[in-house]
Length: 212
Ligand code: ZN
Image 1: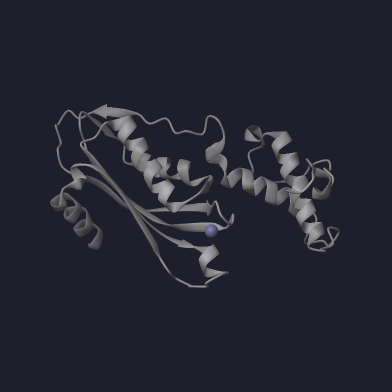
Image 2: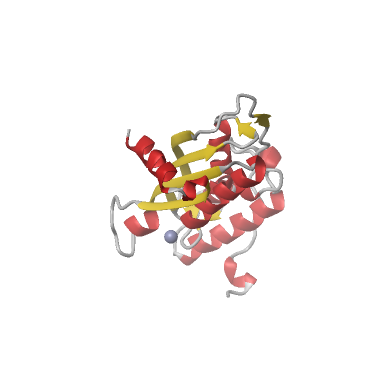
């Protein structure tokens, strides 16, 4: 591990730049530390930080990381309201093709794709828009696709106590496509199941709905 002194001096943060980033949520100390380290990377690459295209890049990257890793911020967990299952609906509820973007833990480059999520309600049901909120919450952190899949399933089990849950995630990993083995377009598929989805018939129903 490098000594802090090798990682570049911390510099004051420009506060006059116009940006989409919501400064009310930013931990200023965190932003300053990451900005300083990104400066160190730029320097170590032998780049000229006075180049017009590199001016402010250190802080932009730091802001981007804080935005892409927003799911780690305390208070980021979505508030999921559940409703009583008054109609006693006992079949599968599915939301498919939910897009997401995440960053792989191993290389800090994006992996992205779609999730397909289904559950069989118990006594509570959930608003459908919450599926994507939950997915986004767990996607916005350094992730592994396997872990993302499990975390989404566990969240739904905890909040809903459903009779079953199944989540399938299909994603492209830029660390595989841009470098290393270079397999453009390769899809990584992960799935996690709980409860009634252990029965083959229900899993097949899920997969049939996916094919449509
Ligand atoms: Zn990776």
